[in-house]
Image (cartoon, rainbow, N blue to C red; front, side, top):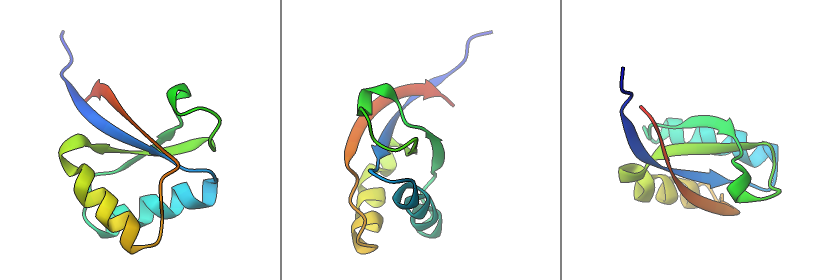
Length: 81
């Protein structure tokens, strides 16, 4: 059985509080968001990151900036859907 993959954007934050707040902000903005363990590619940021589908990246950034949250890192990943 072959699993389908899609491109996602992962935003990392310096602190757990910011990552959890980002999840809440994105949920309120109707962005499809999942809280995940921070990928190694984002370095030594806190233990949590948020993953959004890449087509929703701009909406996510706008919602985060409106809430005065700025990601401390961003990567693209391919993941199962």
